[in-house]
Image (cartoon, rainbow, N blue to C red; front, side):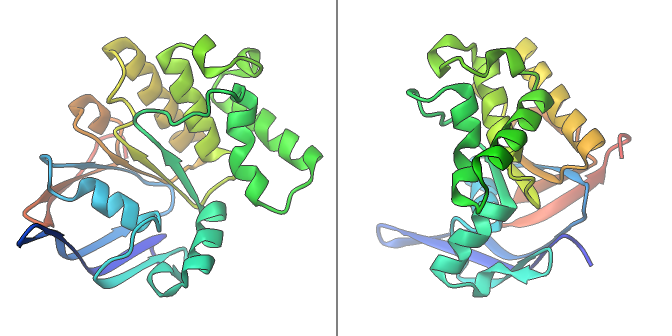
Length: 230
């Protein structure tokens, strides 16, 4: 069984008098340990698919199962609880809390889980080591570079040891050198920790770290290629 199983997924939006359907009858499987890139022009449904898989939005039709749980059938409360323990989300613009340190930003998702302070501390330390920010733990976002802020965001995404990490343009706000460092980090997390990752990107360099490359066009996945890195 695949880690993620998507069947006949359809999502539409109403804009004025028009109905826009970015996703229509999409089928997709993602296996444990894969690093999948998702490309496509603006408006093709990339972020929509990401948010549906992450349980942030709901489809109009179809099903999504993650690690055997059909999330499309969960109640709103159950979905929120499931998401806190199973999904790590890497944002393009970091979305860090400015009044919290790097340590505290990474710790945030753990506050939703039944963990004591010692357990939270251990997990945060492991995440800080994974993203090479142990020496920046007490720094606030304003004291960090853009690349370091994104590393904090990645640490926050992996600190719960989630079933799946989704990333929405993780290098979109970074210069080429810093982007390369973040891609190296994501590749290392996938390779060494076995993190399963679905990444939306416009960056062709980002797709080179993927074990599988998907292209969304006209509401459906039309191209799937396997990288030599797989």
